[in-house]
Figure 1 (spheres, rainbow, N blue to C red):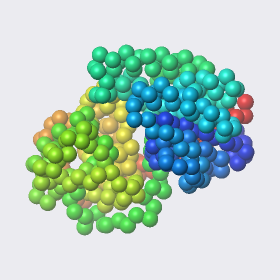
Figure 2 (cartoon, one colour):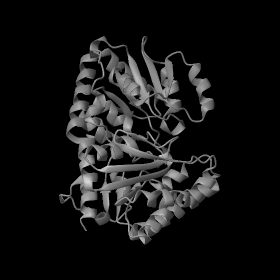
Figure 3 (cartoon, rainbow, N blue to C red):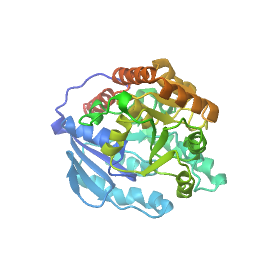
Figure 4 (cartoon, rainbow, N blue to C red):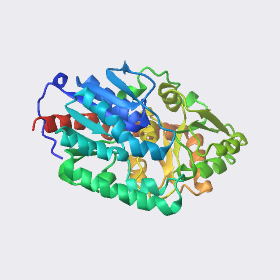
Length: 376
């Protein structure tokens, strides 16, 4: 989409973000997009799963009911959210979930400006939903994709989380806004000098079979003495926690507040991400990779073509076959035995983050998109 800068006083613009799936502290929806917009002077309302109406970091949160049933949520959310959306009298509506496409079309009937935010390739995303019978996963995914095509023709713009997702939408209507960390995320965090840190290899986020659960567990059994893998986040399914508890070289910490997670990342020796080569993962850009970079720690990551661009080409760590325990363990040994080289890789990672992967550049794209749309 055009990047022409249009000057409109932000405090004259009211933006409403909507999500029936995400929770109020979602990194992309709240931390990245809504808070950034508020800091840029926009009036921002967020209709999302939350327990009460309140204002947080300049964002007015309107609570939305959490449905116990995914089916009921998908069926009723657009209609329950519609009066809440219209009540805001916002200038522009930005929605985040495929199930809200009917709401977007209705908002266009009311002549509102509407933006669709696409976080995932919906076909691959639904294809990996284990709670759905396998026979239904791709038909549902293709149905959603068909609705996306129709909705895209009706609404004003599409925002995607990765360049790969953007390839499925018209370039003239599409802006890529990637999930990069902010330079400010690590401000105020006390840092232990790299040479004095314990040999902690950190993994943050959701861990399951496709994001490397088995590879992490098996490699933990062969780590050099004194090295541990620290996992912070959620385990899916929860039954896998028992297996973690039996691993002496793994420390599991349930998900905590974001600042605490960033503190642990900043003071780790190595960041690890061993996503398996599934169709969905080939083009994945998990936030953890860029948080490791922003923290200035070396990375051990899967050897997909895209991830090699992030890690190997920036000399920011080591890419490995995520199914090869030998390669994973050798990479850990190299980085722990050669701290000066590991520290340099971490420094390279930080430089790459500052030059290529800082959220501020993405935030500017979003502000510019709104300005362009509302000037028409």
